[in-house]
Figure: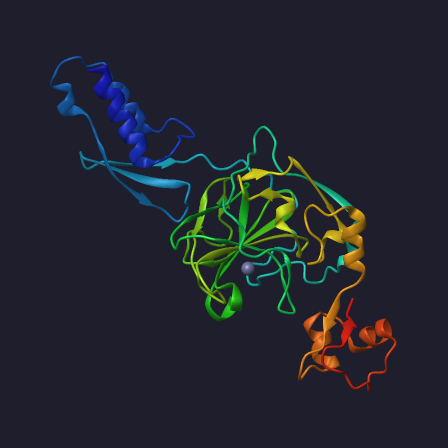
Length: 323
Ligand SMILES: [Zn+2]
């Protein structure tokens, strides 16, 4: 008898798919029935037959087979939101647009996990593209091939800052941006499905979307970015995607990381050197204005770096320093 009670209780919990934050009335029904020890008790047991969502994703309605229902509250992630909503913008892909890299501290330490806050890899797999200049434009994240419909998980606790798709996100396709309590933001592009909405609290490991090939994509893959104060840096500095582990529990972000030429595995000296110089190989049809726009700089700055006049005629194949 006990066994069937227990298994039905497990069924109830499984049906609801939740951990109870507090003992709801529905559980008391079970305990009451447990006192009975005859065969008829089975007939009196109340079974959960369905769960319904409410506008609050942490509160569900459970329907029982005796036509009663009850609210159950799921455990909410314990997220420290102090400072998390600074420069909060659910309308734009990127936040902190007024912050310049030069405004950022030389170095900042972010605690990624502690005893109460863990890590789950968003996805595990080989990289088909890394954080780098690709075909003359910055590729601000890494690409990991997947099958359409593969589950993408939030690596840390956080709050969903942006959810978009279609024209609004351009090359990203269906995009989700999650901000984590330490200020880190993670981006998930080309999704086939978005499973969360803006301002949703998400726990580490919680599914937030399904992999896809929407936007500027040549095949199903996840485009994953890590940004701090809106500035991208190599996600491989945070996560080892080969085995789905964290590089370290503490992430030290240095200002020279905010450059697509700066990669995980480089020494500080190597990283600073690429930050100092970025070159562009002049192609047919290039103008100084177009090159400046592409690299987020000005014609004047390029002319100064290369010691040329803004009237200079560019030669195809010529290398121009743009940063
Ligand atoms: Zn990509």
